[in-house]
Image (cartoon, rainbow, N blue to C red; front, side):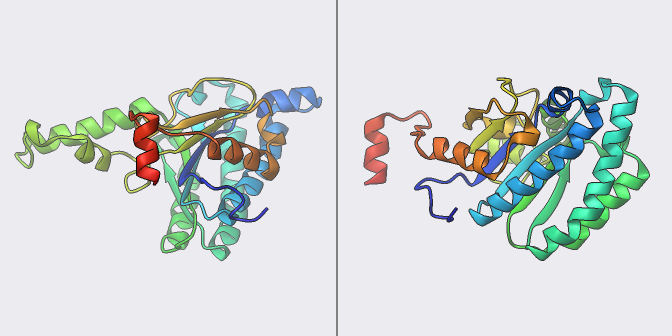
Length: 247
């Protein structure tokens, strides 16, 4: 697959990696084995995204609602995060990929936080694909946090309420400095955004794949990019206005 395969490429792709447990059940395996299988899809998609020279890709690894899952599964997932970070960070660094983890890290173990810190420090100055992994993340948590930080600045006299606009609000979001999401992919046939990066997906295109995440490989990723490439993004404008802009 060549980087110029598609005429219109997204700058930022967000992915809700759904279906690991159902994939495992369909194969007579434990749910944890499904999550392990999903790591292979993560590796394949990141590699293909880098080949296409995308600016950023955000993976929804663990939502703030996922704590409701069985304790054994949550514990296994956290161990998998640590293992994957330690195993993959040198590969990411070698390929110039910068890793950034977003979410409420206060509930994560000290060992996982140390692994995250080490990986972020190692890749901090890389200039290639920016890989954002959302862990213990919720879109509403992100928006509420931005509002709290702005409110404190108003209380301290640094800002007035009239100073606050979309641009200022955006700078307080967890993923500040990253382009808005152009394409959101969700696997396993589910068609909802599940409290993912709500603010940044205001104008995102959506692609819902019937594949379980462990079956979503580089070719499936290319298929999603191909569908995106064929869509016309209007941003509130008419077709005629879009044509004039593109002329």
